[in-house]
Length: 278
Image 1 (cartoon, rainbow, N blue to C red):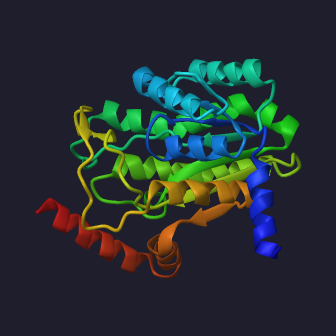
Image 2: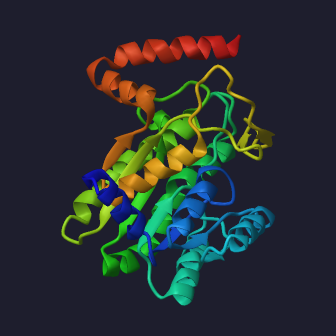
Image 3: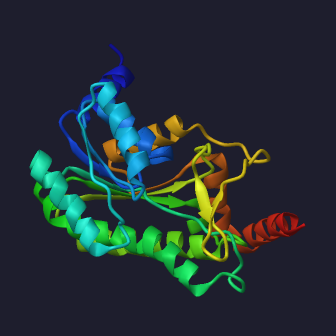
């Protein structure tokens, strides 16, 4: 048997009996992660604010014989984060992996977005990851496990019309870098994935400037990566204990160009913003 096949089997088996919490896992990338990890023998705790969608994902996973538990909660509230962790420990008695996946976007300029909406995006995308990590760390220490933060290409260079979202994702970079220094002697793996444009879930929404939920429109002009491919790439980051990774060729080019010539990236994004305004 070839070395690559042996590594593949090893990675597959790595998930067996691992306890994994995935925030924002009722739809999209989080849901796909839950299924893929569950199919590899992981014990998955799924979470979302929308209980009806969470219940559906739970039922779908159970129907496939997967080991899953569901805990609804709003990660922007620290007490809910503590509840999610306590639920996981009560059911499975340990915690190996935390995937900070939950997030929300708002489409509006900084000038027009209501302050409360900007704050909501920061609360969910950034503080939600902070609070979940704080609550999980004592248990992740015990297993020398992994904490993976789901970032975005918007965390490499800010995008027009998405100042709140870009700010929340850029803040994750500083959080991860600081946390990696603080945890350097613990054996904990800290990872940050700069995810690109994944296929939209039909139920995916974003906030407008007033905080109203709007359906995410199709992005037909942008090549989208299948959700399953994104999920498997995220799992591979944990398996290999990678610290950072920019997904897709566009993402890698963005990261490289932003280091070499941020002005060029700025011009490209400025042109995209102008087209979006027309």
